[in-house]
Length: 106
Image (cartoon, rainbow, N blue to C red; front, side, top):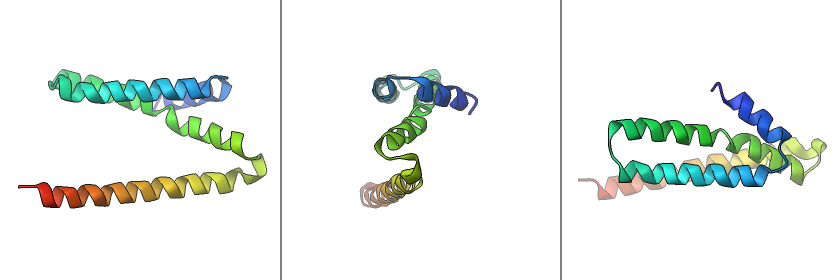
């Protein structure tokens, strides 16, 4: 939580928003793979910290991309649309995971 304002400011000032977002996604992906590759407690803690730090890039970057797509007058509608798709995606994934867990579990 302490790093979020710093990252948000960095994203706002940066001219390389897409590159920063891609690097953060790559870092989070590699870190997630490390969970399976090196399954010990210290690695889990380090990986979760890295994923959490990389995850702070996405909200301000998505907001910056949305503002780049529409004018300031229309940003509230764009953000609302983005959030509705995000919430629906979370809802859908949670239900799929519950169904798979129910049918695959012992």
